[in-house]
Image (tube, helix red, strand yellow):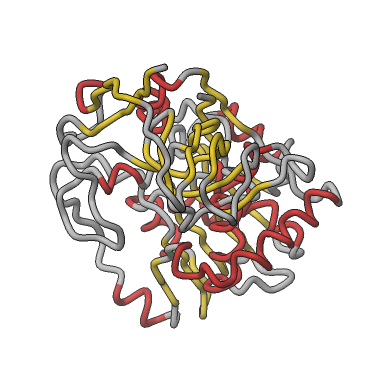
Length: 332
């Protein structure tokens, strides 16, 4: 039985291509004392991985050329020489893009498919849901009756953000890039209004029309001109959660935009970058709350499932063309 691994062959210039990745074979490793042998079952691909493909300092080290990439993975324990794990258990953690790999168990969390489907621990009950919940909790500080604006609203994080906004009693407005997505976030996820940024001729006016009482909290997943439009429409003491900037990830030059300082000062706006791993100590309670809302049918989700280990790079690339409905997951 051969192992397969996916490495970063070369750093992308602009949008990633399949040529940036390399699939190779190697021997299946044997676990040493204190280690586990893991078999990947489900692999999460996420836009933020694009940032790690650049050779620059960030909140997390960049991927190394010639080395396997990594992301959130659900894996089965095939063998265990570690007293904390048992053969047949399933775990969730940041793991390499390999079919089989060993681990000392650090950073792995057990997941139970009796309580929820395994894939949900990469999505609504995993970093996706935690990002939505903790971003709103720690920075957004939503209050009943406020207006919440969400970009990337049809995506994995954005769709959960909107639903939490409704649970909290807010007016929720989403921004997405197709009429299909506009219909989806209103019909399936309960958004009160939606804006198709690809067909809108003036995004500033579109936000103003959809948010007649202004924007109290803006959950930003895209950056760029949509962020500019949100800031123009923010209320006094508004809060902006900078969670992602997918519109900028593949830019080869540093983009420029309006100077935001006057808006921030004039309206006492808080704008803060958000990295979910800064709040690891809060993961447990947050996951419990998300699970409770799921059990109460207050929270739902969508997944785009791609079959085959070899298709992980293409699934990742497809994120930048908006081909995913909700969370993008590869079934190994």
